[in-house]
Length: 429
Ligand code: FES
Ligand SMILES: [Fe+2]
Image 1: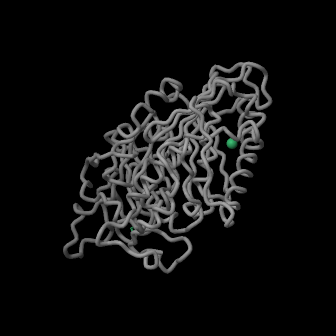
Image 2: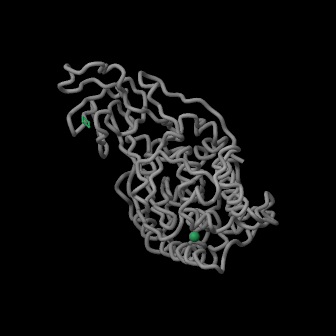
Image 3: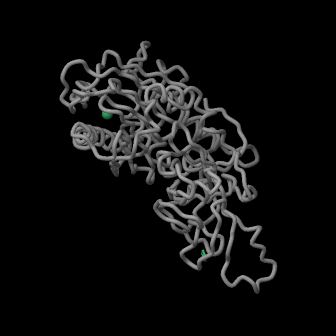
């Protein structure tokens, strides 16, 4: 179960401008009339019982969660609040934010976030929103000494403090010292930068236990690797169907014949821990049909799924690291983004081949599977199934899917209406 506590560790002048998760607006993509209203969605006990009926903490006798969680727009909204707005989201490799005055703009569930290293070397993250009229302040990435709004040119220091507001000298009760950008939590974890919109979330290091040590033991060269490539996919399936598929290799011998020649499936082991799972296998020892690993310095397939929507991995080949993200784009669409980091930004031939293999073989195979699953979930013929698990925790076992679903149910639990605020299904949909 996910249990953590923590305090906001944000320093500087703008501490008072951190805003709580419950003040956030939920954007309903299908009903523009509600956009901009401060909404908080809750689940009824009946809805939670329906989703979790048949689910057991023992995966050997558990059924999967009900497909309503994959198809009902309400669960998309619940997840915005209870899964995504309080979890750590990947921004970039630290290389982009190594120097003082460097910045990167990212998107966190529809909110633009500015991450910046200030003049004193402190990493900060802000809602990328001007305090005058709400215009976005910065875009892309780069290096800047002063944040200047492109609308009316208000300026802010890199610690978020308002520094200049043109023609404000006539205003009454206008104190520039009291105006700061709203900060959000930011953390460098394994040389990767993450943000969290929840000011009360514990640090990723604290939440993830041994994950950091595990990753660095497999990828000690991570700080030296550099960004090389991104692949992007738009998939017609709920993000959880994409993660479910990612978390098990039961389908690999059926659907990914070439992949099964790349790794030694007999060595594949999957272990689950708190907010992450580890998926480890040795590289195949005979020639493979995926891509050349002839001069490989990395001889393992090491993959981690980090709650809720990030995958971190290292494949057989030259020094490499990949960060995959699965973003919900409505209840039945997912935006998948893979960043590749290599020893040099120029790809070697084997890396071009590896990316081509993922893009032209592995991904089309998986996308076909999950889109078919989503269509199946939309029929009345499928509401839940079983997890095929084995006691050896092999790669073919689906216990990491069960683990992911247990964490999901725990997140849904936090959206349960409390006594005295127990809306019926009708007024809560
Ligand atoms: S909105 Fe930024 S200066 Fe007006
Ligand atoms: Fe797959």
